Image 1 (cartoon, one colour):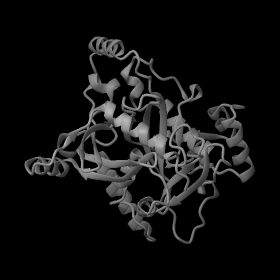
Image 2 (tube, helix red, strand yellow):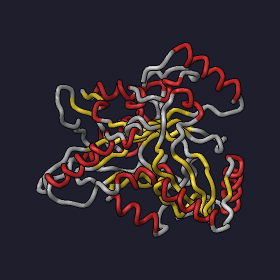
Image 3 (spheres, helix red, strand yellow):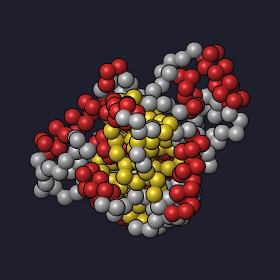
Length: 363
């Protein structure tokens, strides 16, 4: 995106002056890894994690200086897809799951490593004994950044002030394989031994959502929302042709601009509280986050996400069409039912009270 530099810098400075107490979002990246059978990879965070404790999440984490240089904190380009975010996503995926999204130099195939090299490499990179790109070069590999497909950016809303993130999401398709060909060992995920996660597993999208609705696992709104977007496209199948057709349909969706809205790779989402319908809080997804208001970037104006806070976390999550929810709101008001407009402060208060009264749920 091109912008007027002088105007942009002036607007950014104005934002900083008005929000001196607002925590700066930490830059991070996550990747939705899709297997040869079009299943999706989720990890279960350790209970002691400072973010998404005990929840199932996509592989990812903080961008490290070794991944590359990001623009200054005051520069809105810090919140755009870049090489640093892509390297960070691939590095974190390797550290957390052992899946290395890299090619052998001069080849289009994934770099193959034996178990010993893979595990030693994960540990060495995670403990900062060697920079990821240096280690990868020693293995005659190169990170496959070109195959990462941007799939929304998420900026933590300001009603969650203690820890904010600016997270670039990507999709990555592992190569399709015929049913009679054994799966490459390097595409079988393994836990990092409880350092950051206790489980790493591929399952069909529909199965992850079923387990969530059965209260068998924890999903937070970004993960639930993105899984819900993938669900209509990725299904269990055995024929390679069918699996490829699913991927093609998903890519058409990701690249599509719905009625003038940005493509999914361009969307930036910072959920904002709107109102309550019954016990459910309704959050809009159209705002890009305070850091990006001056850029004209947009989120998802067609959908909302609803939930209730219970046992210290969002539950009964639903992704719904915004027009349907607005119509229900109008019908409720016409029927004399009060609809409470939620402020950011109220949303944070309810989240905080439920978090510390309910505690962290163990599943």
